[in-house]
Image (cartoon, rainbow, N blue to C red; front, top):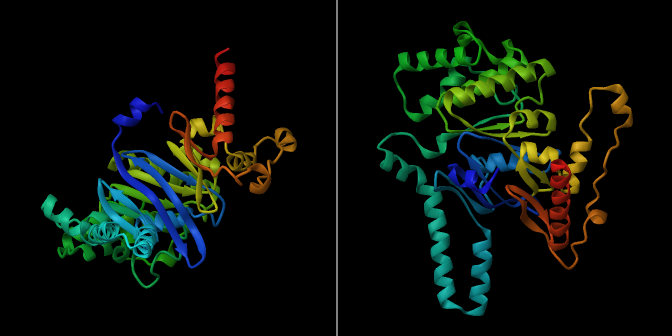
Length: 361
């Protein structure tokens, strides 16, 4: 993606230095990225790397420890850990001017976080809350659906919480969503246990899209499904994306699926983002050793090639030397970011230059 194209695209979601700590465990550590309107933004990595935590923090199921999330330019998530640390240092130093400035910043973060919905409703003159513009599809289609509620109640719950009281309108919307996801009206009065795994996930999708969101966070929506059903659900998400003009944050660990479905991909490792690039660029020029390790683990559906496939093992202690020069996320090529230090940055740029030269020959 060139810089010119990047500038023209509308940023719908901006994640800025987001951190989520659970006691001493840094599940997400200082992660920043932007999501453009209408794209599919993939987040990949092994289990426990912080993918799901990012999604749940964006949608405010978790309170962020630090950092900010902006939806359409308005702050919907605010963490104040770094500001409080700075305030503590300012108090120790007796810097009254800095203390007042930091207190204002903390108060503003709290205000933005708490009142973004109220301000949005006043500006748009509607009853729509800003946070309902982001909805989530959960990984486990069994655990995410209430077994005591009918499909009609599950799908309509968002509308009822929103304050819609017209039963006829609610029923029509439920039927519309069922037909949109490939089910029929008769399914509305059944319970979740009466459906297959793929059908349950479709119900979860219907529940998410009934509020007409702008962003859909799909948290490993196909990992619990059979391979044939996985393809159906991915195709359904693709159709809905085009029909409803959705922006999708697609969280997964299956790189082959992410490659097919995503426009850009972010690679996570131990709570940090180690690489970010377009899908084509990431698979053509993987730079970070962890990304290469992940790509080497993708099985090849050819027994002769699969026999010769070599796994790349990633060991951060031997693959990097960060004793003196600490890493940061840097743009080594247009739209291609890698977590690296000065030495590695030079090496990666040289490597990309060589590959570009060989491709031109």
